[in-house]
Amino acid sequence: MKLEAIKLHKYYNSRHKRLHVLNGINLKAQSGELVSIIGASGAGKSTLLHLLAGIDVPSEGEVLLDGKNIYKIKEGQRARLRNRMIGFVFQFYHLLPEFTALENVMLPGFIQGQAAKVIKKKAADLLKQVGLEKRGAHHPAELSGGEQQRVAIARALINQPQILFCDEPTGNLDSKTGAKICELLLSLNKEGGYTIVVATHSQEIAKVAGRRIFIKDGQLINN
Image 1 (cartoon, rainbow, N blue to C red):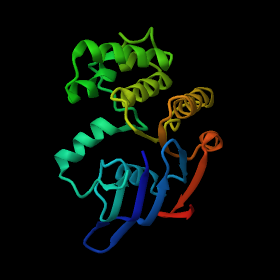
Image 2: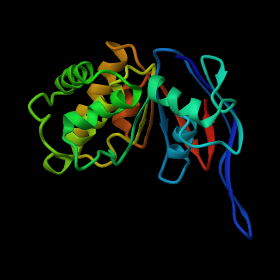
Image 3: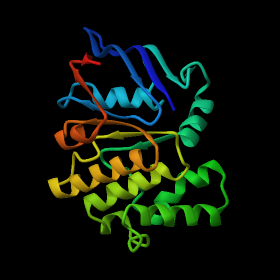
């Protein structure tokens, strides 16, 4: 899936001033690309990823997926688009604590309306793919940070999205665990053919990405 952002702005108005978080972002990612967006905390990485994935709404500008502006459709349609075509991996995992690892992975499939038997097999296969086939019955509190992140990645893949967004996927992990997540993302890109856009400050992820884009103060400084 091809991704394009055109003159993307995000700002917040207060009584005294306007906070301009993103300032005219232009960005393209081709189908099958692994792109890293690199920047310090507060540079606008997460905000940009949320806009590209249709989670938040830009103040100005367009986001095109395969040439279609995702902000020209109704919110309900955009929610279905996210569920069917977009995978998102959050920095803080956002796993539901009352559900097991397997159930967390299954959840987007239920939302899509797939049969429980089909979803369960898909989820088990994905947990095996990320090396957690023996941890499916465990709840998030019983998993390490790296294991929770791998569950979150499996959950993002359950509906076979065409594009995967990852927000600081190694930000809360030690270097050894972070390296394993990097290897997993590279495998998903090279072997699975996923288009992947990663927001990060990690040089390890930057090294494996096919293209590196730097963001500073809400603007891309090379693209």
